[in-house]
Image (cartoon, rainbow, N blue to C red; front, side, top):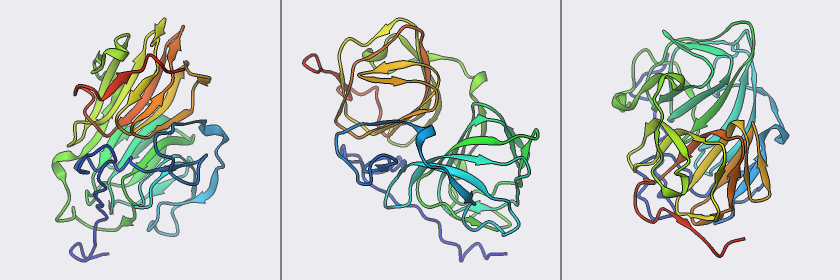
Length: 291
């Protein structure tokens, strides 16, 4: 077992490229994607995550050799080790308790997994700050569990008996069932025909939420988005420019990009991560001259 004072946490603070100081620790600026081997400033990356090659034989780094392999599709990543992936863990997956050396966010796409005393099923969310000890992991129900797996640096497992001395216990979200949360209003006039469920707020005022775009939404104009964003379509559809977003489509939007005209007849549900407070004036701008 590791000595907790010898284990170093990986907590890079990458200043956001819109001028933020990195306090939010989401590290969404400057990412590469599954369809671009280099970061492209101000250019959105929209793609079907099902077309991304699946890495077989994936295991959480540092886990014991007897922990079975899963698989993952790597969607975005940063040189600091931050990444967003679709991870699949098989029905016989079990892993011991311990800590991770970086912040880890989980959003369950399907199936059920138990982490310690908490059970996470479809559309449950968890935020595990670096150094927080969590209990044993076990996939339940006899079928795969599929997870949006988000690290703010390169997360390695360490077998510690207690929380790391630098762990941010006040930020720990063991499990949040999004189905039980109330819908609220969005922060921008561009999405007046939409509802929002907050899952987590970060120190910069950004964070993680679900966005339900209501039927018959028409944004009319493209938008200049003065922040970094990741989005994953959970259900329904939304046409964004020439892109027909349906279930499992993924979006990475760098700051100051022009996002195309949004419209949908039937509505859709998105999982969203953003690194800036969208209630501030001029973080989202309509662009009437766009195409």
